[in-house]
Amino acid sequence: MQCISRRERGFALLMVLWTLMLLAFIATVFGDNARTEVLLARNLVSNARAEALADGGVFRAAAGLTRAPRDGGFRGDGQIYVWRPALDDNAGGEAIDGEEVRFTIRDEGGKIDLNQASAGLLRELFVAIGLEPKPSAALADAIVDFRDEDQEKQAAGAETREYKAAELPWGPKNKPFVLVEELIYVLGMSPEIYRRVAPLVTVRGQGETPHPYTAPPEVLEAMTAALKAPRGRPSAGKSGASGSQSKAQSDEPRGASTGSALGLSRSSDSSGSTPSGRSAFGSSGLGSGGGSSLGTGLSQFGGQSSFSDGAEETETDLEQQERSGGTAFTVHAEGRTADGTVFTREATIDLTGTETAPVAIRSWRLGERTLFPMSAGAPG
Image (cartoon, rainbow, N blue to C red; front, side, top):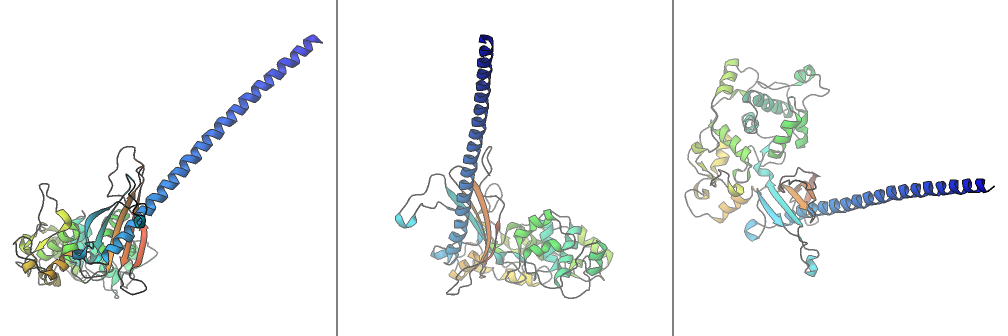
């Protein structure tokens, strides 16, 4: 009996040890799960705060656009603005250390309008973003065929037959673009090309000619090259253009973006970049390029508006340089929290100017992080 009692006690001790090990394992798993939940909650809070900061940057930009730049408002030339919001502006709170909002404003009038731009200007835009001349001409003509109402194919364009041959379940819209996103349906457009060209085009432009003073560098380069192009560029014609003309078009030397033939000058720093996106358009040589409306539009910015000749700028000149006169703007805002979390928001806003809705949001989407450089180990 004594031997059995010892065995029972040993077995009971073994069960207790196994039970304690099981409880310790459960406690460890529960602790890990709890820590994971805490980290997830912290990340959610940081992301939500970064998103709120970025959204606040959009509305901050919209508020600044309701005033003229000379009255403390914002420019539409892509300049980077920095804002460190306070905890409670009305109560005189101080900004949290490390929290920051950066945003840029791009005037839609400075972009190339998909519904009004010529095939030649569109071609030069694709060349400016890195495409070869031949596929650039094909894409430009395909865009013109996509938006026009006829079935007459451009020299390198695409109508219904070409879309069927490519086994696409759609054809050309044969109506004006309503959204920039419709570009993805144009024959020959790839996601990578779209990603590069989308920030440079619009459906809310002010005409065939983009506003030079608020235009992105790639648009300025395309405008310069289009002005220097010879008359009768094949990509702007119909399918009857000869093959020899197309070859001459693809082999012709392209003009440098300095735009010397346009009387265009841009003040640069030692690295060659242009500060604040400001450009100067003189009046010399603006009639070149076949007498297109592009040259006529650029010539409006000659005379006293040139930064290079030192002439005194009038108030009208300054207004022309700061904004195109349109009401649509694209805002790119990035909010960063104290722990380094960054959220990016992009929105297209329209200053409708009505009493009930002074600002209308035309689009609201996520953006690509560009204003806060990525650092090793930093959260996204």
